Image (cartoon, rainbow, N blue to C red; front, side, top):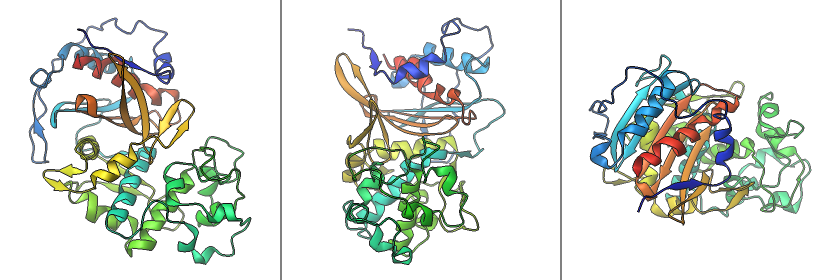
Length: 368
């Protein structure tokens, strides 16, 4: 029986970008699929067909990117059955160029928090936040609700603080916070908009708070802790941090990675926290991270991971997604043993959504 993957209504936004052209009108362009190069970076390579994927949809996708049907895509990397089966770079980018993950870095922060819990630096996700930041007391607009905010509330974007990056009028919207020398002071001072756990609002300030909590509880800067327990075990040596706070180099909020290394992070989650036989993150943390905790509209949300759901032959399945501004994506689909990393340059543009179209219209269907 022919299998199909149907994604939920969230796909409509992605596909809307393709309505002005005939999606499958094949452009004439010289392109031949090539097996990814085997280099000493921990990846075993294979072919699409050897791992059960059809080449034709991937060829169509590649040609449409090359002819600029899909705008400003920088890279696509596909891992199937733990093997690198496709990689391509576009618009002047190559394998060794670093990409800012933007908000896809939030899923990386989730992993770092999980490690701090695994190693008993933080007791669990019910740990209250503000006792770790006595330097900000007394808190403006303090209340029992504010004092009840926990690690879990920040991981699920449900703190209840008046912090909403998607509302320019929000007092703790991301761009307003970064105008301050210390972003935590104005964040911690805003009033509560909701009772914790009752409403989901996209709040980057909560993730900044988590990175600071890592430094508070581990005795290491966030970047040093992440290097020791994630980057080094994954063999990721080429990376850099983005420090958006003024005059601060101890608490980064975004990471730059190469696409192959973005895929390593996705594969780590696919393999229940294991990379090359080493348990880096506990399986329990992976399970908790991918459990639906809250929602943004119809889309379920875990611990700083987006949980896009669809069906294969009538059965619900998930595409677990780290995503960032401009079109930075790490897709993990355990049902198909599939990991995909995509980068792009469509900052603050609706074309940022194209990565999901590539995933749902070409990459997933190539598995059937």
